[in-house]
Length: 396
Image 1 (cartoon, rainbow, N blue to C red):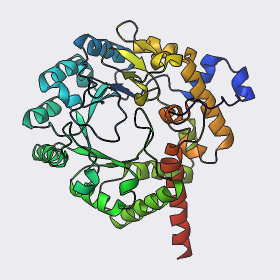
Image 2 (image 1 turned 135 degrees about the horizontal axis):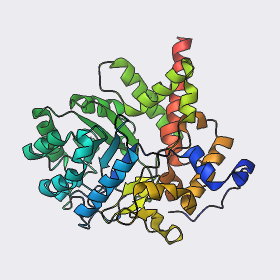
Image 3 (image 1 turned 180 degrees about the vertical axis):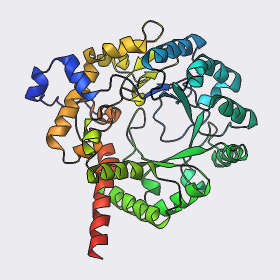
Image 4 (image 1 turned 90 degrees about the vertical axis):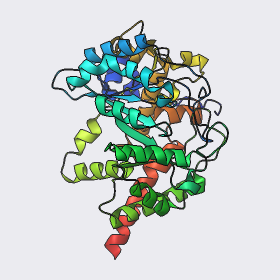
């Protein structure tokens, strides 16, 4: 991580606005998703992984899951939209099926009432028939991490350095055999930025329901690798757009869907709804019960100046109580300053809405910073690629 950049001055409105009012202007009162990290351990050791504790077998006690379920019950209403419970980081299935089922059990009354909906992000190497039965019984939506065909997936290896590709495909085949829909997320680094068509052809052939493309970022302990530049990522997204246009029946690409939603809302006059949408606080609960806000990547990060980003612990406070005091946290206040700075000076702000908190910190050492590599590669580059494509289509 770089040395902290000098804090940028707050706007006059931010200086005059009460901290809680300012927080509520930017951050939603009720989370749309809660991330649970049931274990820090991962059975893979991918070269770009950001998790510092992926070799440590820390397991979430049942009491933590029970406390989160009680908290979510406070935050949801019958008939309202469900809170998405995302099981993520390191490899959730490394817990074993029996322990994972125990952690799901406290949420079952809420799930049966339509108040929560589970999702798991997995490397798929451990998926078998019994896991599929568990996913089906609890309505767990599955996301699979795979970076493309064998050559593009080479950085996903196990702890002995062996490629994980065949094991990932075997897990995906098992999902398909049991009729379980799944999405895929691929990390796109400099090595495979120039092969989007091969990547997308392969991912579409897996039978997934959607595709997410994460341009490699500097975060967590993955800070030494160079990130792609703007020129290369504009070209990448232009080719992704062209591929999507040429394959209308292919699974949707998450990032293109988001841009399409923004453009449709601009066209039909509902864009103020996009602009008025507040950031999800994204409470992320570690195995210990500690809670961080705004960015799951901040969990397990050592940062003495911010008390390691701890906002509270669910064994001592409910999520509602933790969120009620979130405006008092120094890093949250810094992030709000960063959002004000973005809105004041960035031409892409109407679309991106200030982007990701974690990237600001890992790249600049402060949340008040504005532009990040993530902004350039995933927000700005996508908009510029779409604009270039539109101009070319119009000229033709």
